[in-house]
Length: 130
Image 1 (tube, rainbow, N blue to C red):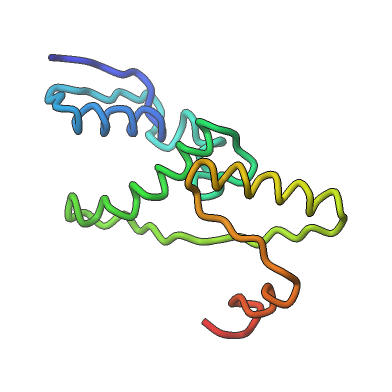
Image 2: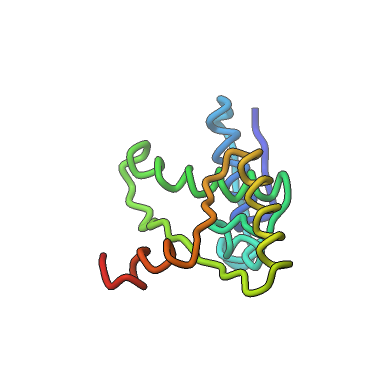
């Protein structure tokens, strides 16, 4: 089966990757500018599904997991290193919002943690540990 996809970026490359995993053998990615174009602005937050909803959050989480396994699968280094983020709730409303988001991410099986102010002090680099 021959299929072409005329957009690059993270979505185009990801789509073709998964098509080949499903058994497609003749796929072509054509991008007129560069593969880093296309959906770049949204995908720059691929490792942070915090503000995303449903399918976007799932896609962001799946993208992070995919980068972790690509090197073992292909032998090609990706340069991926996952990083986290600490978001501070400065008001009761923000803390309530974080609880809502935590519940949503739990539903999607996406790792997240709510930390107390004392627990945050134990997290590198704030703690000075690595």
